[in-house]
Image (tube, rainbow, N blue to C red; front, side):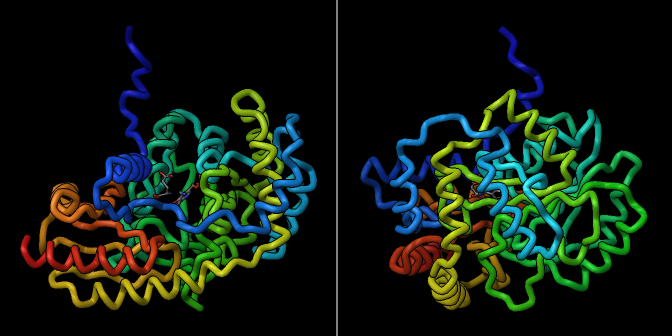
Length: 378
Ligand code: PMP
Ligand code: GLU
């Protein structure tokens, strides 16, 4: 029996696939260090565990766009953070940032509509655009992974429907500069497109220069913000995200959601409420320490170059002097050292590999030492 031909063109998430592979190999008792995961290695914060424990008796559907109290609290937090007037009508709660994005594409794209995706790019943008009938259009970032507005301009057509901005950026750890965002704002002035700001790493920033792209681009009625609790509170498995957008978009997303998944898990919504009540975590200090450690160790490695990540928890290593084929590099690395990294091909960036520093200092030290031996003998 033939399956849906559109789906046969879709690739599985390479990051999730590699993470599962690493977990599987570890279970077999192999000496594996998994630096693939786009996932913090911290436990669920105790305050969230305690709050959620009180809610275990809750088992009913919630309103499709989310618990009213949660939508209100997210709206207040968005208003404060982004300085954009926001009410509950602007918020729909989803099963993770990933669902939020997918529903946005379903909401805004007609067949053949083009979405500008700066590359390197997180694995799901391209596949989600394809799944929802759109056409991904790839726009290179600069050499330092900043926005290249002249490239964006070059790729505009009559069919351009949306642009995705992700800062802090996965996989490069870069942040987009205020200067280039201002140039982008000028370019967008006469264009009628949606700007999707994927701000999932917005709480994990090491640079004082960081500014939320939407803060520069506003006022912009076509702005769609994606955010969630996966990275801010280490709740990846709880699957809780949201879209902040104009009420038309939000209502359409809720309509789609009402016919597909319904509300996000009620327990996870209570976890999100708790996360908003206790927004402080010590993640940034811990990650900052690891970032410095890994940066110092990597600096000594021959033939590998990189920019210090300014946000998120990824080093994006240029390995072109060693091997242009990152897939091959990663396969050999795994075989001879037990270390798993994500090959740049997953992000449309051959000759690079992504290293997550969301791992213990001990594992990070061992991993970079093994990487050094490996590179020296490649
Ligand atoms: N955007 C980016 C850039 C990501 O790296 C991820 C992966 N976590 C997501 C969105 C989706 O996050 P979630 O786990 O909340 O679905
Ligand atoms: N976003 C994470 C990553 O880039 C998680 C994996 C995924 O959602 O595909 O690794």
